[in-house]
Image 1 (tube, one colour):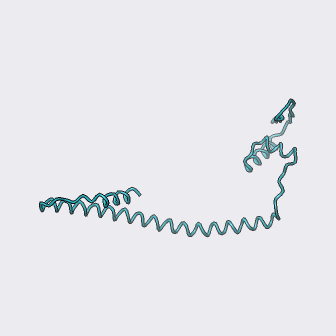
Image 2: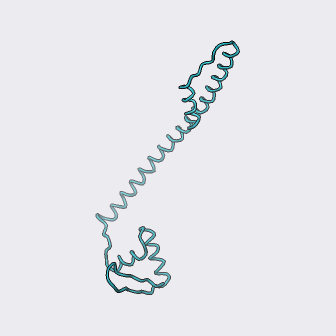
Image 3: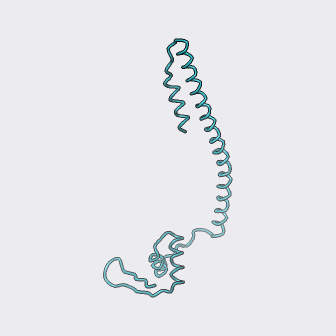
Length: 132
């Protein structure tokens, strides 16, 4: 693999021939850190490596603690989400039943010769629960 590095300003370029194994490692680093392979080589050549702030072991311990807290919160959240799903399904069923009862009530009023009521707010509420 041939790598060509050009300066941002001016003339000149550097051409380097890389073997496939080295190029694969460069691509892996580029993918892992979200930069271009050319940038990885540029950082390696200029020595612009970032040193970790603090001790690496302490940072890894903090990461593990935060991961454990995240999983604990996810456990609580998943059970709440399941309960909320169950409640929304119950609301849908109740909205369907209420809609049926309203239709039955309207039919009975027509049968008795009364004027059926148009409860617009209740119909909006029913349509809200049927959409969710």
